[in-house]
Length: 338
Image (tube, rainbow, N blue to C red; front, side):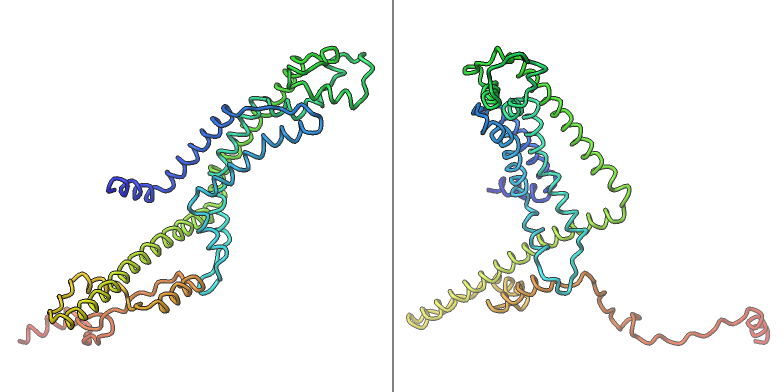
């Protein structure tokens, strides 16, 4: 248990590195999921487009939401966004910075999925096989097929076993054509995402350095404040439970002593230490009121310096009057007379 506790504390203290590792694992898992996925195009004109674009976009959207779910700061962002203003104002720039930071990490796995899918080419081949330019790549003089029948034949291009339109256009030619387009779109998508990541991570702090530092500082403050509040609540709950249990057993021991004429045992010293940690909050109603006030009106971010003591020459004590310095010539004349 101690080893697991140490690992958990390490992950809490290095939360940013831990989330980056989780995003990397999700990106690797998305690539492995696609390689293990059995892609089966329906080869029907009414379903090819929906199936191909669905495989391209729906898993990416699921991975994007999963990236938000695995981020511990989502609940903190929602709480900060929905809480009443109270005594502390809410800065929209801080909320935007927190959301952008989480969105950047959550987009890694979807970007990998879309990139791998486009570079493979099966989804684009299935989705747009009915849009192959037959006049350019196939036999334009082939007649006897209506528009609907031609789409039905072209929809079977991804399915080599049932494709029967070799006279219209060769199956290998259509697949190579669509796969080249898909790979070109994939590399353009990778280049676009890489450029956007570079601009966001490198150039944004250069133009708005003060706002960037302010947003980053207060986002860290909100995270740390929440952790310290949870730790303080946990410590108070532990002390409260210890005192309640101790009082219960003290009452039981008093009853047993009265019934059997045995002297009650002395309370341990740690119960008194636990009572000191309650900070005056010793009942359920007061604790509920304190938690409600923390949510509704958090204290303002303004620390009042403690009052300095008044004795021993500190502020508030009247200092003895000071006399102006005597010139050197007058002092020399005085000593000469003496």
